[in-house]
Image (tube, rainbow, N blue to C red; front, top):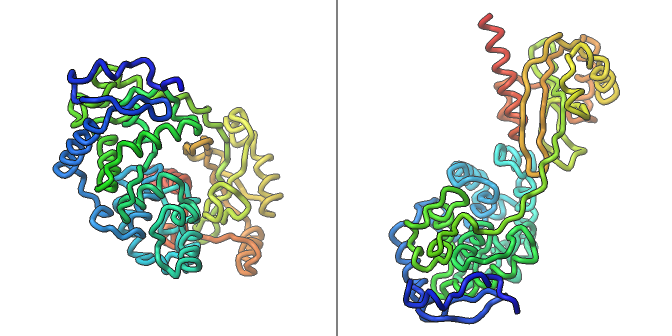
Length: 410
């Protein structure tokens, strides 16, 4: 098999670093031997015991709490997760509570974390646990992986931390650390290469303290072995890390560029009734932000369309408002502001337009709300806590509130 780290001869570093012996070639990667591996684990875990981050989810071996934290930590910074973690467990202290929660409450507690499929999948998984495992979190990898939304990394994290199963937890963080340890020339963006890092990770993980080992990897990746501005010379593993020994830290991991996010252009309609309340709707027919609340959004197609003055696109907005909502708003001649929000694969550019409804249109919306046929509501700022808004809508609210403040100061 062709070695993935073929540009480096590991034998040259025996006794010239902390590497003392050669081990097997694993998935094309020449690793160090058992003597070095034992010393490596000892060094790493001694550092972790002294320097590990004090995080609330590390205070418990409860698999439910570990699961909640691991799902939240996907795509979200640790500092942000801490408050959400406490709030979530306060609202849903047990698997049963999560399984039986109403979706509106679930989304409200998750509001602002984004990637809402995470919490929806968690509820499905909680229901699986209640139905298939008598409400007890499964204690083996095969059953953990059957739960909705739990992939190899999350299963590895829960299995190793909660149940002491000797398995690695391989995410982008771990792949970066391992790629630098052995100068692995494999693109971490390619799913087929994941098996390389899982196999090497399995070789490295401490069989007696797998949970602590995996959390040590997380801490190292967020401190000295960060994606940018790494400080490898301060790492406790500097004498084991080939990229540090060769001055090539910035080369690893190998990572192909992601496809550029597609821009999408919207007009957000800030429509008020006679009481000063704003119209919102529940996104029940959308894959993105499904069942969350936003003001009415009209897709404009192109940036050129969005850049047109309101006087030139009012006919289009009126037609769309009539077709989608059965109303004909009276738009202010000047738009309020623009909001930008980045998703993984999309960038939303939202221009805000302020309008008022005629008494007839307001009555029509009120009838729809009263009938329960459509998911519409009138809200004032003090009622925001009653609805689950995505982050992009919170940005729209902020822009609208800034506009109102400016109007008061004129």
